[in-house]
Length: 267
Image (tube, rainbow, N blue to C red; front, side, top):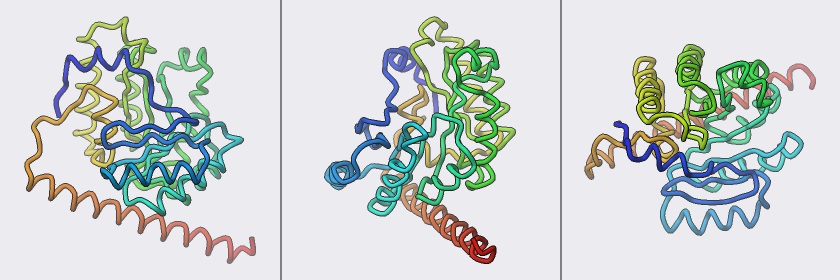
């Protein structure tokens, strides 16, 4: 991948795509709001997906009180479409909520920290320590490199974002940096260095980011270094299906193991 300098300023003016009550498609990614009605949403997804297959479904969970609504949508998406499902939980998820999201079919879970600077997190009500606990719960449930935490470029000094990238990678959590409107105040060179550090960190830790590439290419200034040829695209599609099948099998075995554990305990 390489960094598209012109794309950085374009992203600054683009609103965040996450909403619990909206449905939209950008390129080969569906953004699905977890509070949307199930039947109409699945029908709309079906019509669009089978005109042009999506590579990734991104489900934004709403408030914690409406968790079950998004949980049901996750099950329906996983049942009807053969693609990765990313879930975004923008609150301090309990261990039970994390387990339910995984059992419902979420392949990759994003619990955003937004900022690594503790004071900035506290000012914005992002509950830094509590979200770290939620990320630890997720790491105990989801396969390695299947837990993501988003950081917002521009909401804190670039050095804090870089420190956050390193800290997350040390926990085997994939950091994902998004350009926000607050980044307008930062020089392009500083933002470029942040994304260079992010890419270098992924490479050094050998983080599995391939399933997230459709999202990365939309949300960051990172772009493919060169267009895929027909053969490369075919090989990648085979590898994607292999990774997805492995993810589904691990979930099936994990859920079965938990169910058997509850049964043996008489619960």
